[in-house]
Length: 146
Image 1 (cartoon, rainbow, N blue to C red):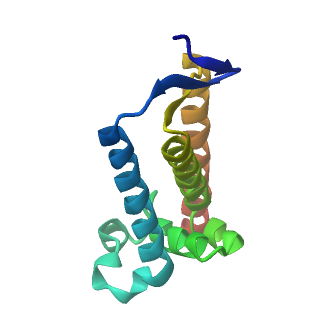
Image 2 (cartoon, helix red, strand yellow):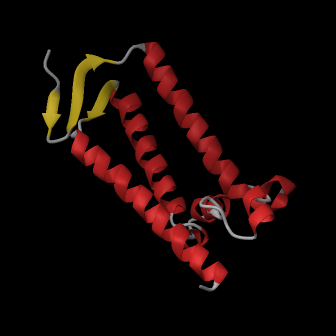
């Protein structure tokens, strides 16, 4: 049978097998466990949160602050999350969307697909990488006081 097509979203008419549904449930449990870990574990509690790049160079690396940002975002402190690292809220938003998709697939027992053109996919990736690079450069300039 032909899948139901709604613009860039398609819902398959063939049901998910039990193994596929169990895999999606396992992925949801993993995401929720990660969310709980981010929510209740503060990254500064362990000594492994020390950045080797920062220790060696004295400046923040491109991912410095991401753990604290994810922790703040999991605690629903979005402004703090964006101040620690601009991509923290983006990562959490993507995880939320993936969770919603997986939950919907488990509930309706059908596969949901998103068909984006290659140009749209490349634009999204380029946009995220550009934001990341600009954020890193602004932070670097501020730290070096150029």
